Image 1 (tube, rainbow, N blue to C red):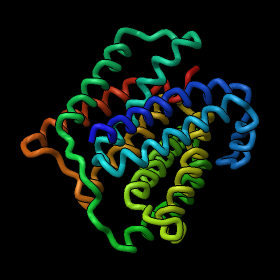
Image 2 (image 1 turned 45 degrees about the horizontal axis):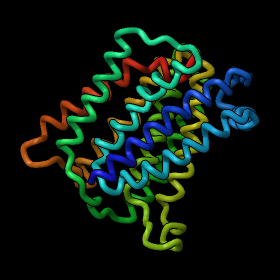
Image 3 (image 1 turned 90 degrees about the vertical axis):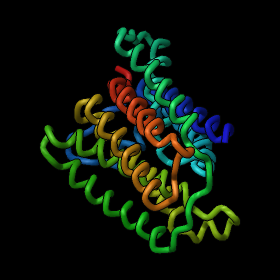
Image 4 (image 1 turned 90 degrees about the horizontal axis):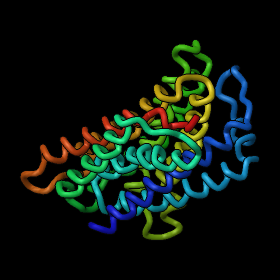
Length: 273
């Protein structure tokens, strides 16, 4: 199980550094205020730092997939929320100053992950039927519609709603990554979960970029973290057989809450200003 944790931490570091690179690149990109605009992704990909950041995202995603095969979803998603702590530290390199409470939050994130590390039990996913795979694909499309509608809401609602939509799309990526068929190329290409990964990942990136351009970075990032950690963690326990070591249930709960709440305290680093 140790290598599952190693992959989860590699994913957190890759995602955290990618955020800094993408934030720097996004400064040079203008957006519009007319709703969710797919052309926004085209514009940001013209910046080499954004491309490098996305390459790190790809590395992080591969590490996340490996971690999802060996660790409970609640452990992996809490580790990914900790990428905000990585972003906070990495942002020092571009002149960002950390306040004492943010250093405290970083230490508490590490403490929460340590509690999860001693309590989580590594095991494979419980088998699910084709209906579950199809449901993830349908949920991806439904959230896509909801996020598009949210992009045309009032300014007060738009940013938080898009941040939550992005988080829920990333939650679907995690769930699909946990159950997608990997025994052969053919099985992978015919699995609806594979297309849920692609669709939800792309929509999540678009919604998050739109949220960060059109509202409070802190609020949008906080709602994204809540969406991408809570939903898959609950489904993992209820439907996919995630569990803890005997007698360590409350330790795992404490570690999860500590890691996620501390990550929320660092939500302003969802886009480094």
